[in-house]
Length: 464
Image (tube, rainbow, N blue to C red; front, side, top):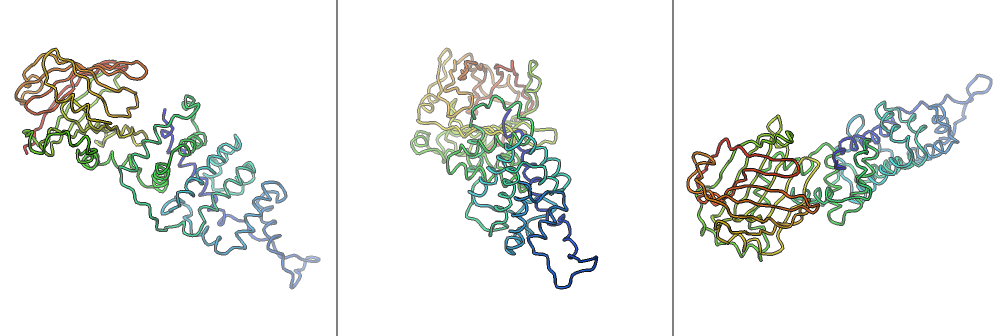
């Protein structure tokens, strides 16, 4: 289980905790009646503001002399004495998402998460208090029940949200989808101490604590981008991973382009136009069939893009959900049998890092002729989550491409490949190299989930 798998619950908790505090102004008890002597009001007598606040707190059921009462009274005194602070609190959205249109500095974003994490850790009861009282909107009931440390954490969050310039303020933060997705991938790649206990992280407070632990471990500027994307989601927007799944073709065109490769690798590719292919796009519609693990079965679309007739091909594999939207997408830039770039967005909460090559060894391997019986080792782009560093392929027999799908022309050269993960698990695959089209196509994959057969249902060739 990934920490971010519980992200929605944790974000809801954070929104709820803040929302009921913002509603406190609407729910404050009225000031007590003027003091009287013998049942008649005393003219000219004014109760001091601090005493009025103490009386209000007491009327709400919180002992103003208790530890929590003192924290609450001091905070309300500060609100009453500082019109600017009070105005900022009142300007924050009430009754809806308090983080909508809220722009915080990178430092303040991390501090809000730190305080929320601390609140989640301060008392076993605090998480339930935030969930239950937040839903009821009873701020004073929560203030009475929270641990003192939890209440102090909450007041600290409100101080950050009410800072000057925190609402609809302009910032200098402008990130590309690729930069934000990279931050998400770094976030997902961190293995925290004790992360094997994640399966027991069933409540949003525990998840919130783990999320902060991950974010705090990230280096800059990755941490800044990750908190930016997280708070964008908190405000009701879409995280970068969701944007990519909504429009994976745009991400393929932006990132999986050989012009983005380092010059030391790009210069090893053939010149543009020197390797003409008979398509601008090949679209393969098919189905994965796995009888051992039926959850791995389902339809897919594999789109291969030839941009410059230089042998480099960009590939997008998508698996749709019941609504037709991509539930995960795999991105590859390849040359021959070599992967030059690869990345997978497995869900809105699970992203792998962009894997890249360190040198041109994979291109040299891809330039070797496919002679039956020959074995070729292809270095793989890194990092790869499962830890495999290379793909070893044996060239097998040649068959007509039409046996793969009737409209395909030319020969199909079978390849038998093996990858070894860092845990020793081997993945075996059988694929074909379509000679006329300069592309590969997997046919079977055998791994720890059993055997997956690729059933090709349609191939569309889009001419240049």
